[in-house]
Length: 458
Image (cartoon, rainbow, N blue to C red; front, side, top):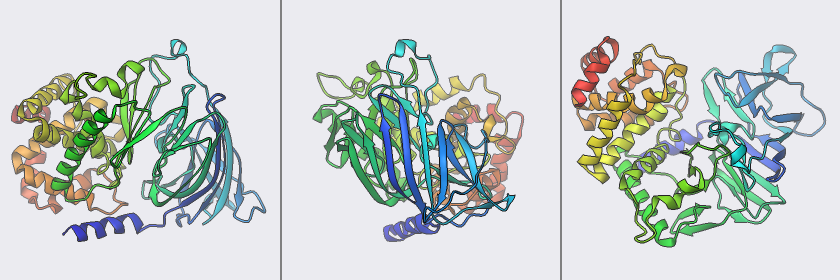
């Protein structure tokens, strides 16, 4: 069985052409500058596409693979697809026809604010898609489009995963980390990966350690504390593997850094990196007791459980379309809820359910069948959806919900995660159309859907 699942995963990752990115990236953490001279090769044959590049990066040129001429380009902005980036394409004669060469060169440069004095920083305004210079480091991810991202418009697929051979230069850095490779000391480092991966770049003045197979970047944890976090991580991953029937990928890397705002504090994943962002008083060490080296509050494990769940809903399958937030965050939060029940016990599970119920008290949820992606608020995705899936669990049984989640994860990579898929995937997993209709009628389509969810969950 395990061999079949692994083969399925290999097929999912290789059914499409994977772009390869090579060249040099030069940055300065003191000046807030990025300059990239790159080559894209093995580019998929996509007719209707756009090329995303962060809006703070200025395109110097797009050139042919032999470096003989510049391609013309059309630039526009579509914030519904990427609020962080401008979109480009190469016109093929008629501006309505888009040419995507199998190999091309791209050069661009940008300068960003360096916010080392948080007294002058905004209260909010930092997020995963930011290119953040805090005076000691740069933090940037695939969401920020710091490297060119290819978007397949017709299939609504963002192709952020690449293989790479990149040299990162940073004269004022002591260490550099590029997702998919080990962190290294130095101010000029070559990184290579034959495994397609989304690119998170972290470079600056920081230390890193390795405990068993896990890297800890800038966390300043004691070895005993690293072991505690590693053990909890292993326990959560084992729970997911046992129930989703898909082996977890590479060991995770934990990374900590401060935000470029006063009050932002959150976690995010660009697999295999789990990033913890927050002011110094909320650093990773703050989770631990100095005396016992144990977690101050085991309930904090729920945050790690959520981020670790993004390997499945965010990496194995990359949600898109109208229900992107439902599949990406809502289902992942449901996974974290199940982990709480398994590893922290019934009392913590009930506490979390009670927290969800408080958070949805003022929510007037629009039915899944008609809601649009930009209408799915944080309360909806993080609190209402796990309650809705708990109602589904009450109606059909927990194992059938796990079967449904397995069905989703085995779906084609180009699947649009809309309401039609929500319905068809449940039925495909073994739930009768009649049983789904009963669930849909009671918990989705009726005006009393929220009240029905709360009643059955309580």
